[in-house]
Amino acid sequence: MSHTEFAPGLMVRGVNPPLRLADYRLAAFDMDSTLINLECVDEIASAVGKKAEVAAITEAAMRGEIADYKESLRQRVALLRGVPVSAMQAIYDERLQLNPGVATFVAACQAAGLKTLLVSGGFTFFTDRVRDRLKLDFARSNVLEIEGDTLTGRMVDQAWGDIVDGEEKRRTLLQTCEQLGITPGQAIAVGDGANDLPMMGVAGLSVAYHAKPAVRAQAQVSIEQGGMDRLLELLR
Image (cartoon, rainbow, N blue to C red; front, side):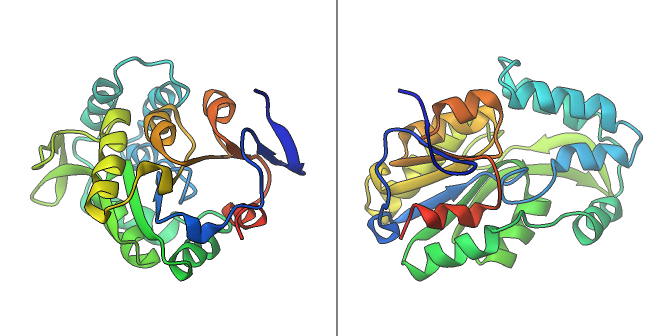
């Protein structure tokens, strides 16, 4: 089934808008390049002059060209060894911005009674701040190991596992639904990269936001122009 253009730059497939936002109970979001305007791992790498090297791996991973996402992330994080925590704070303060329409769409979800989940292959240093800024209910991401005030180039295992990859995103969405006593069909999942496809595949509504071609092709809704608040053209 191919996409049809519901409005300029807003593609739909297999859904008949308008949908009711209040029919959903959970909205799950990827962070990097979805809720925010950058890929945090690439930006951190710029602090040690390795941005091009790391960004090339990130791009391949997001396009779905790397089979082992966890290994690709370990490789990238290893290149971050020696980055001071102050450099991450500077990225947050000076460069990180919410993408257009994100605050509006998240507020609309909250007003309609949905719970909100941030699930990211990024890092708690950024996800915790974005979670608090948007008042999201849940967040899961990776922990960078810090010794003194610098990154070691490793990540820290957590109670649920080691690294948030596509499978962990899917599992987190399903666990959160179970915790809330809802079905996955009552969840909306928004992402842009190949590692978002597993959670998008189990959600009741899958949304690609300025996404990679493989992700746009599989999502029920693809936002290709404008901000995330364009979803409100479909969801009343």
